[in-house]
Length: 548
Ligand code: G6Q
Image 1 (spheres, helix red, strand yellow):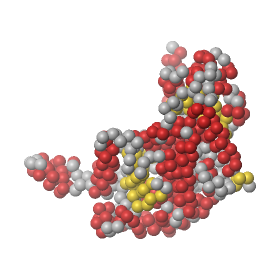
Image 2 (cartoon, protein in one colour; image 1 turned 90 degrees about the horizontal axis):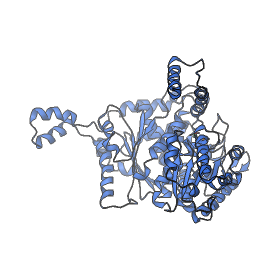
Image 3 (cartoon, rainbow, N blue to C red; image 1 turned 180 degrees about the vertical axis):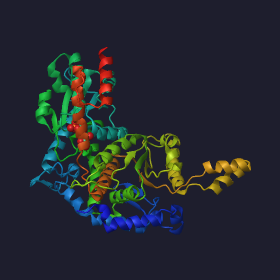
Image 4 (cartoon, rainbow, N blue to C red; image 1 turned 135 degrees about the vertical axis):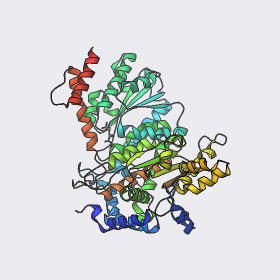
């Protein structure tokens, strides 16, 4: 099959970019008084304004033509209908089934998976209820006050991000902590203030073989047993979330205390499964269901709305427009919400692990850009750090601004100030400030002519820098669920157009293997042949200094 950049629709977009690259967004606004209205969309309690982009209705039509040419709608249906679209692992991709609140049957190999999903949810509900009411106690009969989730990557970032985002909904009687890094510091610093008799560990690992997680889980078990001095204690202080019952049992966790999920749930798409257990413990099962409902509302929209009116599709197409035609290499996620501080890191994994691929589903090398580098920080911290480059640097950095109308912590005029920055930044990025304007401003301030003419170069801004604005009434479990699903489907849209498999992660698998070889050498204190000179010298230095 031809690569997407050989299609007439792609070529039409290349020609169109040549026309658009000199266009000023400010002129587009001046020409069309309805631009903001026509380029806004409210879905699943999220409002998107995408009018501050270097696009016209013609651009969007051409992008939609491209999406139609690759049969985006057909692929979407195939995902929801459980076809094995993850072709390199021969798996369906069904995070949408995990939050299928309609309960419509979803058939995998002829078997409806909804009863299994509902059964695990029911077990989660019961367990969460028991822990939160204090019915589930530790080995010595004490109430659980601290939950420590041990997992990494997809078994960490989602629950960690959501727990921080929904902190206003958390019960005060239960604190949730996350340990992911195999650096012992992470575990040591997390447990040092905890009481083992009141701590419950969730070992979250799809495979239950991941080096970091198993190492942390083993050390956590040692910490517990050192304090409680009874192997029986493990059963009251450790539960597992995994697809691998044999390994869970081998670790010493009773499968009665294991919450399962399935191979058709990708790690980075798994917070909707039992991987979300820490979320449900923190905010309660009903709130967890509201999160699923928000995502389901976005799923229904994505599945059913026309491409031209489809929020995830529009965001995906606009991102692709910049990556493939305007040469943008990165995409910034800028939440104006302190609770969403882990969202950029979460989306970084979601996007970069999904679409950081260089071959098509058929294994053909692509010669166009795929996933951009995704990064960001919450406003206004970012403004005082890297926004300089977004405003005046030489590269285009498309950015998403995300904020809420009401804060959970309305303190004086903090929130109006916070959001004033959101709106001012997107406006300034779009409008810029010309040389003459900067010059006039300084003259008005009384700066003398020579100095003003020099400084005006430094104080002018090119503008025309694209942003999307996503506004919600309030950050709730429902709006958060919709927001995450919005980005998941944005990733899907782009992956389908690029013709890649967004649902495998062979790069991660490689990393899991490589370190084990070197670990053996470190443990033996002897470097084997076969390393390059640099790696050998570094290893020898490390071994010599540790042993010396
Ligand atoms: C996500 C990736 C990866 C995975 C971790 C943890 O999509 O597959 O980030 O989640 O490597 O894997 P386990 O859950 O198997 O420990």
